[in-house]
View 1 (tube, helix red, strand yellow):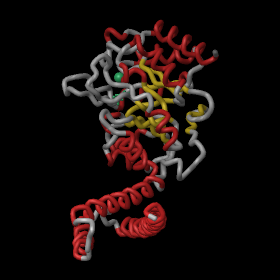
View 2 (spheres, rainbow, N blue to C red):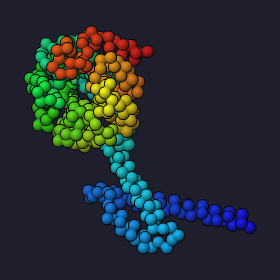
View 3 (cartoon, rainbow, N blue to C red):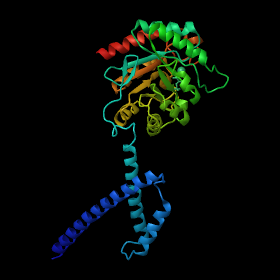
Length: 356
Ligand code: PEP
Ligand code: MN
Protein backbone atom coordinates (compact mmCIF):
# COMPACT_ATOMS: atom_id res chain seq x y z
CA UNK A 1 0.00 0.00 0.00
CA UNK A 2 2.72 2.50 1.01
CA UNK A 3 4.74 1.40 -1.98
CA UNK A 4 1.83 2.03 -4.31
CA UNK A 5 1.21 5.47 -2.82
CA UNK A 6 4.88 6.30 -3.20
CA UNK A 7 4.79 5.40 -6.88
CA UNK A 8 1.66 7.50 -7.38
CA UNK A 9 3.31 10.48 -5.73
CA UNK A 10 6.43 10.05 -7.83
CA UNK A 11 4.37 9.95 -10.99
CA UNK A 12 2.73 13.21 -9.97
CA UNK A 13 6.12 14.74 -9.26
CA UNK A 14 7.37 13.65 -12.69
CA UNK A 15 4.35 15.27 -14.30
CA UNK A 16 4.91 18.48 -12.37
CA UNK A 17 8.59 18.46 -13.38
CA UNK A 18 7.55 18.41 -17.02
CA UNK A 19 5.07 21.21 -16.42
CA UNK A 20 7.75 23.30 -14.71
CA UNK A 21 10.12 22.56 -17.59
CA UNK A 22 7.54 23.62 -20.21
CA UNK A 23 6.68 26.76 -18.26
CA UNK A 24 10.35 27.64 -17.78
CA UNK A 25 11.00 27.35 -21.50
CA UNK A 26 7.85 29.30 -22.31
CA UNK A 27 9.17 31.97 -19.96
CA UNK A 28 12.56 31.75 -21.66
CA UNK A 29 11.04 32.53 -25.09
CA UNK A 30 9.21 35.53 -23.65
CA UNK A 31 12.41 36.78 -22.01
CA UNK A 32 14.26 36.45 -25.33
CA UNK A 33 11.59 38.49 -27.07
CA UNK A 34 11.83 41.16 -24.38
CA UNK A 35 15.62 41.13 -24.90
CA UNK A 36 15.17 41.91 -28.61
CA UNK A 37 12.78 44.78 -27.80
CA UNK A 38 15.16 46.18 -25.20
CA UNK A 39 18.05 46.04 -27.63
CA UNK A 40 16.05 47.84 -30.30
CA UNK A 41 15.24 50.58 -27.82
CA UNK A 42 18.80 50.70 -26.50
CA UNK A 43 17.61 49.83 -22.97
CA UNK A 44 19.86 48.02 -20.50
CA UNK A 45 18.89 44.34 -20.24
CA UNK A 46 19.33 44.08 -16.51
CA UNK A 47 16.45 45.78 -14.72
CA UNK A 48 16.79 45.42 -10.93
CA UNK A 49 13.63 47.48 -10.20
CA UNK A 50 11.52 45.11 -12.30
CA UNK A 51 13.18 42.09 -10.61
CA UNK A 52 12.42 43.50 -7.16
CA UNK A 53 8.75 44.01 -8.10
CA UNK A 54 8.43 40.46 -9.41
CA UNK A 55 10.00 39.03 -6.26
CA UNK A 56 7.72 41.11 -3.98
CA UNK A 57 4.64 39.92 -5.82
CA UNK A 58 5.74 36.30 -5.66
CA UNK A 59 6.37 36.55 -1.93
CA UNK A 60 2.94 38.12 -1.35
CA UNK A 61 1.40 35.12 -3.09
CA UNK A 62 3.52 32.52 -1.37
CA UNK A 63 1.39 30.20 0.80
CA UNK A 64 4.18 27.70 1.50
CA UNK A 65 5.47 25.14 2.17
CA UNK A 66 8.59 26.83 0.75
CA UNK A 67 9.67 29.80 2.81
CA UNK A 68 10.08 33.24 1.24
CA UNK A 69 13.87 33.05 1.20
CA UNK A 70 13.80 29.83 -0.78
CA UNK A 71 11.28 31.21 -3.26
CA UNK A 72 13.39 34.31 -3.70
CA UNK A 73 16.51 32.22 -4.28
CA UNK A 74 14.88 29.96 -6.88
CA UNK A 75 13.36 32.83 -8.84
CA UNK A 76 16.58 34.83 -8.77
CA UNK A 77 18.23 31.87 -10.50
CA UNK A 78 15.48 31.88 -13.12
CA UNK A 79 15.92 35.61 -13.69
CA UNK A 80 19.68 35.14 -14.04
CA UNK A 81 19.27 32.32 -16.56
CA UNK A 82 16.85 34.44 -18.60
CA UNK A 83 19.32 37.31 -18.69
CA UNK A 84 22.01 34.92 -19.91
CA UNK A 85 19.69 33.71 -22.68
CA UNK A 86 19.42 37.28 -23.91
CA UNK A 87 23.21 37.67 -23.83
CA UNK A 88 23.84 34.47 -25.84
CA UNK A 89 21.47 35.80 -28.49
CA UNK A 90 23.42 39.03 -28.62
CA UNK A 91 26.72 37.25 -29.28
CA UNK A 92 25.26 35.20 -32.08
CA UNK A 93 24.41 38.34 -33.95
CA UNK A 94 27.94 39.82 -33.86
CA UNK A 95 29.12 40.49 -37.39
CA UNK A 96 32.52 38.90 -36.65
CA UNK A 97 30.89 35.75 -35.33
CA UNK A 98 30.80 32.43 -37.18
CA UNK A 99 27.12 32.21 -36.38
CA UNK A 100 26.67 35.20 -38.61
CA UNK A 101 28.96 34.04 -41.44
CA UNK A 102 30.16 30.47 -41.66
CA UNK A 103 32.84 30.62 -44.35
CA UNK A 104 36.34 31.88 -43.54
CA UNK A 105 37.13 35.47 -44.39
CA UNK A 106 40.23 35.47 -46.57
CA UNK A 107 42.16 38.75 -46.49
CA UNK A 108 43.91 39.44 -49.79
CA UNK A 109 47.02 41.60 -49.77
CA UNK A 110 49.07 41.98 -52.97
CA UNK A 111 48.27 38.47 -54.17
CA UNK A 112 48.75 36.88 -50.72
CA UNK A 113 45.72 35.18 -49.20
CA UNK A 114 45.64 35.30 -45.39
CA UNK A 115 43.15 32.92 -43.81
CA UNK A 116 43.22 30.48 -46.70
CA UNK A 117 44.97 27.12 -46.77
CA UNK A 118 48.62 28.19 -46.70
CA UNK A 119 50.09 29.83 -43.60
CA UNK A 120 51.50 33.32 -44.26
CA UNK A 121 54.43 35.16 -42.73
CA UNK A 122 54.91 38.78 -41.76
CA UNK A 123 58.48 39.76 -40.94
CA UNK A 124 60.41 42.97 -40.58
CA UNK A 125 62.03 45.22 -38.01
CA UNK A 126 60.30 46.46 -34.88
CA UNK A 127 60.92 50.05 -36.01
CA UNK A 128 61.93 51.66 -39.26
CA UNK A 129 65.18 53.35 -38.26
CA UNK A 130 66.76 54.18 -41.61
CA UNK A 131 66.48 53.40 -45.29
CA UNK A 132 69.52 51.06 -45.18
CA UNK A 133 68.37 49.16 -42.08
CA UNK A 134 64.89 48.60 -43.51
CA UNK A 135 66.16 47.70 -46.97
CA UNK A 136 68.55 45.04 -45.60
CA UNK A 137 65.67 43.11 -44.04
CA UNK A 138 63.41 43.59 -47.07
CA UNK A 139 66.12 42.25 -49.38
CA UNK A 140 66.52 39.11 -47.27
CA UNK A 141 62.78 38.58 -47.28
CA UNK A 142 62.56 38.99 -51.02
CA UNK A 143 65.25 36.33 -51.44
CA UNK A 144 63.00 33.92 -49.57
CA UNK A 145 60.02 34.76 -51.74
CA UNK A 146 58.23 36.39 -48.81
CA UNK A 147 55.71 39.13 -49.44
CA UNK A 148 54.45 40.68 -46.20
CA UNK A 149 56.78 43.24 -44.65
CA UNK A 150 56.27 44.89 -41.27
CA UNK A 151 57.97 47.91 -39.72
CA UNK A 152 56.84 50.51 -37.20
CA UNK A 153 56.94 54.18 -38.10
CA UNK A 154 54.65 55.42 -35.31
CA UNK A 155 55.82 53.63 -32.19
CA UNK A 156 53.63 53.61 -29.08
CA UNK A 157 56.38 53.37 -26.46
CA UNK A 158 55.93 52.89 -22.74
CA UNK A 159 58.38 55.69 -21.95
CA UNK A 160 58.07 59.10 -23.61
CA UNK A 161 61.88 59.27 -23.63
CA UNK A 162 62.25 56.18 -25.84
CA UNK A 163 62.48 56.30 -29.64
CA UNK A 164 59.02 57.23 -30.91
CA UNK A 165 59.55 56.19 -34.53
CA UNK A 166 60.30 58.20 -37.67
CA UNK A 167 56.61 58.94 -38.30
CA UNK A 168 55.73 59.91 -41.88
CA UNK A 169 59.41 59.76 -42.83
CA UNK A 170 59.34 56.09 -41.80
CA UNK A 171 56.24 55.41 -43.88
CA UNK A 172 57.94 56.99 -46.89
CA UNK A 173 60.90 54.64 -46.47
CA UNK A 174 58.53 51.68 -46.22
CA UNK A 175 56.67 52.71 -49.35
CA UNK A 176 59.89 53.08 -51.32
CA UNK A 177 61.17 49.70 -50.21
CA UNK A 178 57.80 48.07 -50.79
CA UNK A 179 57.88 49.34 -54.38
CA UNK A 180 61.48 48.27 -54.95
CA UNK A 181 60.91 44.68 -53.80
CA UNK A 182 57.19 44.41 -54.52
CA UNK A 183 56.38 43.80 -50.85
CA UNK A 184 53.13 44.54 -49.05
CA UNK A 185 53.63 46.96 -46.16
CA UNK A 186 52.14 46.40 -42.71
CA UNK A 187 52.60 49.34 -40.35
CA UNK A 188 50.98 50.63 -37.20
CA UNK A 189 48.85 53.75 -37.18
CA UNK A 190 48.11 55.27 -33.79
CA UNK A 191 45.96 58.29 -34.53
CA UNK A 192 42.46 58.24 -36.09
CA UNK A 193 43.23 61.32 -38.17
CA UNK A 194 46.24 59.57 -39.75
CA UNK A 195 44.28 56.64 -41.22
CA UNK A 196 43.18 58.41 -44.40
CA UNK A 197 46.66 59.69 -45.23
CA UNK A 198 48.30 56.37 -44.33
CA UNK A 199 46.36 54.66 -47.14
CA UNK A 200 48.91 56.06 -49.60
CA UNK A 201 51.74 54.29 -47.77
CA UNK A 202 50.56 51.00 -46.31
CA UNK A 203 48.85 47.86 -47.60
CA UNK A 204 47.73 46.78 -44.13
CA UNK A 205 46.91 49.11 -41.24
CA UNK A 206 48.20 47.67 -37.98
CA UNK A 207 46.37 48.55 -34.78
CA UNK A 208 48.65 47.75 -31.87
CA UNK A 209 47.95 46.10 -28.54
CA UNK A 210 47.95 49.43 -26.71
CA UNK A 211 45.30 50.76 -29.05
CA UNK A 212 43.00 47.75 -29.24
CA UNK A 213 40.36 49.70 -27.38
CA UNK A 214 41.02 53.07 -29.00
CA UNK A 215 37.47 53.09 -30.27
CA UNK A 216 37.81 56.19 -32.44
CA UNK A 217 40.80 54.60 -34.18
CA UNK A 218 38.85 51.35 -34.67
CA UNK A 219 35.87 53.22 -36.14
CA UNK A 220 38.11 55.16 -38.52
CA UNK A 221 39.84 51.94 -39.65
CA UNK A 222 36.38 50.51 -40.26
CA UNK A 223 35.48 53.32 -42.63
CA UNK A 224 38.28 52.64 -45.13
CA UNK A 225 38.84 49.93 -47.71
CA UNK A 226 42.15 48.56 -46.46
CA UNK A 227 42.97 45.40 -44.52
CA UNK A 228 43.52 45.87 -40.79
CA UNK A 229 45.81 43.80 -38.60
CA UNK A 230 44.30 44.06 -35.14
CA UNK A 231 46.43 43.01 -32.19
CA UNK A 232 45.02 41.70 -28.95
CA UNK A 233 45.26 44.19 -26.08
CA UNK A 234 47.79 43.48 -23.37
CA UNK A 235 45.12 42.55 -20.84
CA UNK A 236 42.18 42.01 -23.14
CA UNK A 237 39.90 39.01 -22.86
CA UNK A 238 39.05 37.11 -26.04
CA UNK A 239 35.57 38.62 -25.89
CA UNK A 240 36.95 42.16 -25.68
CA UNK A 241 39.25 41.34 -28.61
CA UNK A 242 36.30 40.16 -30.68
CA UNK A 243 34.30 43.25 -29.77
CA UNK A 244 37.21 45.47 -30.85
CA UNK A 245 37.13 43.73 -34.26
CA UNK A 246 33.35 44.20 -34.27
CA UNK A 247 33.90 47.99 -34.07
CA UNK A 248 35.80 47.81 -37.38
CA UNK A 249 33.37 45.47 -39.13
CA UNK A 250 30.37 47.44 -37.93
CA UNK A 251 31.66 50.44 -39.88
CA UNK A 252 31.91 48.41 -43.08
CA UNK A 253 35.42 46.93 -43.19
CA UNK A 254 35.52 43.16 -42.87
CA UNK A 255 39.14 42.75 -43.95
CA UNK A 256 40.58 42.04 -40.52
CA UNK A 257 43.46 39.84 -39.42
CA UNK A 258 43.39 39.07 -35.71
CA UNK A 259 46.78 38.83 -34.02
CA UNK A 260 47.43 37.06 -30.72
CA UNK A 261 50.52 38.73 -29.26
CA UNK A 262 50.56 37.47 -25.70
CA UNK A 263 48.83 38.82 -22.64
CA UNK A 264 50.08 40.09 -19.32
CA UNK A 265 50.18 37.55 -16.54
CA UNK A 266 52.23 37.06 -13.38
CA UNK A 267 54.74 34.94 -15.34
CA UNK A 268 58.05 36.69 -15.94
CA UNK A 269 59.97 33.99 -17.84
CA UNK A 270 58.53 35.39 -21.06
CA UNK A 271 57.73 39.01 -21.90
CA UNK A 272 54.05 38.16 -22.15
CA UNK A 273 52.17 34.88 -21.93
CA UNK A 274 51.29 33.47 -25.33
CA UNK A 275 47.65 32.47 -25.01
CA UNK A 276 47.95 29.70 -27.57
CA UNK A 277 44.40 28.38 -27.18
CA UNK A 278 43.02 31.80 -28.10
CA UNK A 279 43.84 30.78 -31.69
CA UNK A 280 41.39 27.85 -32.01
CA UNK A 281 38.85 29.74 -29.89
CA UNK A 282 38.97 32.77 -32.20
CA UNK A 283 38.89 30.51 -35.26
CA UNK A 284 35.81 28.81 -33.88
CA UNK A 285 34.02 31.92 -32.67
CA UNK A 286 34.83 34.20 -35.59
CA UNK A 287 35.29 33.87 -39.36
CA UNK A 288 38.43 36.04 -39.36
CA UNK A 289 42.02 34.91 -39.97
CA UNK A 290 44.16 34.60 -36.84
CA UNK A 291 47.94 34.98 -36.72
CA UNK A 292 50.44 34.82 -33.87
CA UNK A 293 53.15 37.38 -33.14
CA UNK A 294 55.86 35.23 -31.63
CA UNK A 295 58.21 38.14 -30.94
CA UNK A 296 56.09 40.26 -28.63
CA UNK A 297 54.41 37.28 -26.99
CA UNK A 298 57.60 35.51 -25.96
CA UNK A 299 60.15 38.34 -26.01
CA UNK A 300 62.78 35.59 -26.38
CA UNK A 301 64.71 34.62 -29.49
CA UNK A 302 65.11 31.03 -28.30
CA UNK A 303 61.34 30.59 -28.20
CA UNK A 304 60.50 32.01 -31.62
CA UNK A 305 60.75 28.69 -33.42
CA UNK A 306 58.90 26.45 -30.93
CA UNK A 307 56.21 29.11 -30.45
CA UNK A 308 55.76 29.42 -34.23
CA UNK A 309 55.50 25.65 -34.64
CA UNK A 310 52.94 25.50 -31.85
CA UNK A 311 50.95 28.35 -33.39
CA UNK A 312 50.78 26.68 -36.80
CA UNK A 313 50.02 23.29 -35.25
CA UNK A 314 47.07 24.73 -33.34
CA UNK A 315 45.61 26.33 -36.46
CA UNK A 316 47.07 29.83 -36.84
CA UNK A 317 46.86 31.32 -40.33
CA UNK A 318 50.23 32.96 -40.05
CA UNK A 319 53.18 34.13 -38.00
CA UNK A 320 54.60 37.56 -37.31
CA UNK A 321 58.18 38.03 -36.08
CA UNK A 322 60.75 40.82 -35.92
CA UNK A 323 64.03 40.87 -37.83
CA UNK A 324 66.79 43.50 -37.66
CA UNK A 325 70.19 43.61 -39.39
CA UNK A 326 71.89 44.40 -36.07
CA UNK A 327 69.51 43.86 -33.14
CA UNK A 328 72.07 44.89 -30.54
CA UNK A 329 71.85 48.50 -31.72
CA UNK A 330 68.11 48.48 -32.53
CA UNK A 331 66.24 51.56 -31.32
CA UNK A 332 63.39 49.39 -29.98
CA UNK A 333 63.04 45.76 -28.87
CA UNK A 334 66.80 45.15 -29.15
CA UNK A 335 66.63 42.00 -27.03
CA UNK A 336 64.11 40.04 -29.01
CA UNK A 337 64.66 40.69 -32.71
CA UNK A 338 66.43 38.10 -34.90
CA UNK A 339 69.47 39.07 -36.93
CA UNK A 340 69.59 38.10 -40.60
CA UNK A 341 71.42 34.80 -40.05
CA UNK A 342 69.09 33.80 -37.25
CA UNK A 343 66.21 34.72 -39.54
CA UNK A 344 67.57 32.40 -42.25
CA UNK A 345 67.82 29.44 -39.94
CA UNK A 346 64.51 30.18 -38.18
CA UNK A 347 62.61 30.34 -41.45
CA UNK A 348 64.35 27.31 -42.91
CA UNK A 349 63.47 25.19 -39.87
CA UNK A 350 59.92 26.46 -39.74
CA UNK A 351 59.29 25.71 -43.38
CA UNK A 352 60.86 22.25 -43.23
CA UNK A 353 58.73 21.50 -40.19
CA UNK A 354 55.64 22.55 -42.16
CA UNK A 355 56.61 20.32 -45.08
CA UNK A 356 57.01 17.22 -42.89
C1 PEP B 1 54.50 45.97 -32.93
O1 PEP B 1 54.11 44.95 -33.50
O2 PEP B 1 55.27 46.77 -33.45
C2 PEP B 1 54.05 46.23 -31.55
C3 PEP B 1 54.27 47.40 -30.96
O3 PEP B 1 53.43 45.20 -30.97
P1 PEP B 1 52.25 45.22 -29.86
O4 PEP B 1 51.29 46.27 -30.27
O5 PEP B 1 51.70 43.83 -29.96
O6 PEP B 1 52.92 45.47 -28.54
MN1 MN C 1 58.63 45.38 -31.35
